[in-house]
Length: 409
Image (cartoon, rainbow, N blue to C red; front, side, top):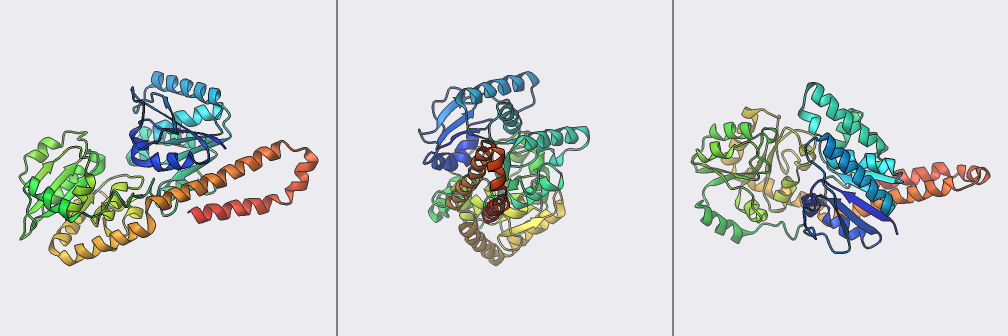
């Protein structure tokens, strides 16, 4: 049994993406989770077998707060003597990997979910990129949540092909197919509540409303559409840059804020639109697909794995308003295409992104990595003569570990 610590900046990361991994790991290991609890005594979906630790990590850069978080995390790791420390999200990754390295934790993992610097320029991009490269170098292994993101990290020399792995076909945690499924009654009821009839074609955006999510392009593209049938554009998520004011001025747009019954909204809509400038994977796309909702998305790393172009959805050049509008118009004008894409999107999610499939791949990844770690520690305890005797079998063992990782990918 290993002693494992997961670290995130906010508990919602565990609720939304990590609970399945944390809960399953408790079957074989002692699992701990450190995050900014802010008075909470539990975390949604994380079972009671996971030990919680309150650790405040500022989401924005703050030298004094970050040093304080790093020191407190180092103290926690030293006190508990963890065998594995696993961070998720960029800020948590930087603080955690430095602390874990200084505490000499043998297995240090990080999951990449997108790069903040991908859309930056100048000195800001250089600095943020160097920070990612720094903490990636301190890990013993890392995960990327999509094949194209992994390649992006390798191309930018953040990590190496040998060190970085993708679980199954990608995504941070897959989709719970029992929670996310098409509901015809919810579609009817929700449309009635919102005053939207069945003849209206509904586009849906789900996520944070800011410029990097492509909101300006989406507003312009939607206003350029023409159709013989009514159209509606709905926005769900936190408004980070006051777009809701502009949206409320449009009769065929509506800002709905945060919604808990998101699967019902996937069921009532006709197309998800996500024109982001950067994404790690875009989990909302496969959640929507599980509810038989096709997607239009920008052709960037991450989203190009979430959407199979012309099969489970449509991809457009990033920041290209005309291309985005043309694809939206295409779905309005072609009901049969929309229907075909929705069915194919659903079949692809069932085949490749079932949550249980991702959890099994995650457990296999841990088994493989921890086996390598045990082999390394045992080797260090051998005498020189004993180490030489085993040297001949080293290449065979490495070959087996690569085979395991290739199967996970």
